[in-house]
Length: 126
Image 1 (tube, one colour):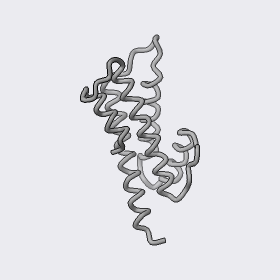
Image 2 (tube, one colour; image 1 turned 180 degrees about the horizontal axis):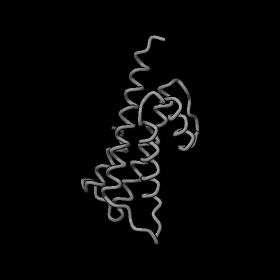
Image 3 (tube, one colour; image 1 turned 180 degrees about the vertical axis):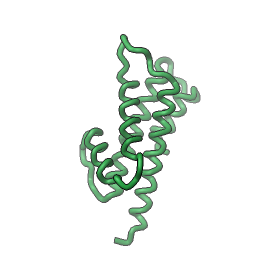
Image 4 (cartoon, helix red, strand yellow; image 1 turned 90 degrees about the vertical axis):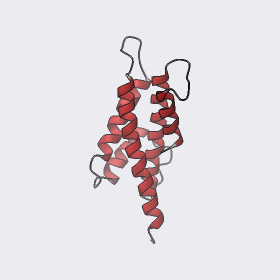
């Protein structure tokens, strides 16, 4: 679990008090954790993501991890959900706790895969 994801969970659960908009703050932190994880996934395949946008990283993960069922789909769904929650407009309903919590669990899956990919690369003798 990344530090940003741990902070997002703490904000969402109320362990880390944010005066207002705690669900939105948790969404921002979780989205940051997702961005870190996507970069780690690309690096785990021996590529440098540089300053690539998150949309580009999502496309890279889709191609690089086509043999990992659901990874790219989970990452894309989490990104879309968290972006919508973070960029809430006044004329829309606020994102719910459950929506952000579900997206955060997907970020956890992606982050775990990023950790697995980094360990596999480190053990690779080539």
